[in-house]
Image (cartoon, rainbow, N blue to C red):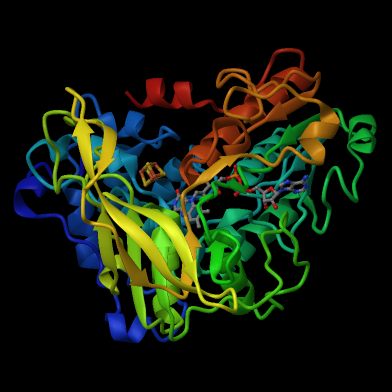
Length: 501
Ligand SMILES: Cc1cc2nc3c(=O)[nH]c(=O)nc-3n(C[C@H](O)[C@H](O)[C@H](O)COP(=O)(O)OP(=O)(O)OC[C@H]3O[C@@H](n4cnc5c(N)ncnc54)[C@H](O)[C@@H]3O)c2cc1C
Ligand code: SF4
């Protein structure tokens, strides 16, 4: 434990952010780094609890008190090695993880939690600055070949781990660059893309091969992969967006959030935002810009918040966000006690930049003009019934609340229903679960087809980057066991948690 009295002396402080007017001028990250003194103070707040609940709050089982202690002692290489032992990509989670570990932090019972996510980001960035992050090449190659389909965080984590185990790994990605939603979903202002390039370069130096523009089931035949590789990991994500099938859906001006967000990420990368336009690639054949429009984002989650931030950067006339559910409470209540992940009001940095937020509201119709362009939304307020354990269960429309609000661009950000079935999955005939995801248990990651495994959103449904990394790592261990007749020396999350306690 760094400083026994640290949690009494210092309170939680996040690093500074660039002012809103400055950050709206571009798509750059805007969260600054801690000074050395502040980083030291924030790590000093960790109490090194007897039972550190933060470990189990983190889907990766990150060994948090140990790296906090190393940061406090300025033992940077040690801090990096502790962090890298459980997390392949702390530079991603340190920027965009919703930090369920912080909800489980014991200090959070009566004080603000440790700034675990920020400390994680500082450890990895300091490690890169100081040259500690070097390619980790395996000493021996096993002669076994593994194909990973999809290069999001799940596919990347599986590939990195299987490569460390000595297998020869090729990652197939249908897009033009690796990264999955890290690259072409999450906006640059949350995660600049050089961060992904830096990691991909390292993985290439470690021996992983990336094949982009390789759409398995289309221009790469799955039967060829089955013949050439000893195992296959499916990590294609959950890409089919939830639709809102109400009158006027066909109007010009109603789009999926991902069509809008992906175009902007392509523009930021200096690429043609309209190249390879088709539904599968989430690229729409016209430029989607919010400039001078009344924008309504339908869906109150992270994807919606990213649309808010992007619309403000486009200089929209107004930006409004709708959520069907009622407004959550500001803090924990009796239904979400510590250390559960609380469903409380979240105000993202994009919300800080300006948005009219509405809860308990439903969109009944997209209203168009004579030319087929969207001009308004017909909406209605809702009254929710709540169950005994505080969960919203049923709603009725509030009489007399129906009205039209002006809107020329509506973005559907209501989540994703399941992975794409056409192409790869249908051709394989792999078993799906009741939600349409690829069926495999969390313990085994094995699909219904021999030597084919699955990880990430394609298995668990739409989730988080930290879960995708965790799934990729755990799945890699199962693939390694499969290739080595039941033996694997790759770490598992359960071992990490037991060792840490
Ligand atoms: C807009 C948005 C913002 C988000 N923000 C956050 C956030 O801030 N924090 C957070 O933790 N999570 C966030 N998420 C969720 C997070 O991005 C996902 O949970 C995570 O990326 C899932 O990882 P994955 O590897 O399973 O799949 P993905 O990241 O979806 O990657 C799948 C990859 O597989 C490729 N692929 C699919 N089929 C094929 C095929 N047949 N052949 C070749 N390649 C194929 C796809 O092109 C894609 O690159 C966000 C999601 C969205 C949409
Ligand atoms: S990966 Fe996420 S949950 Fe895990 S320690 Fe980092 S911020 Fe916390």
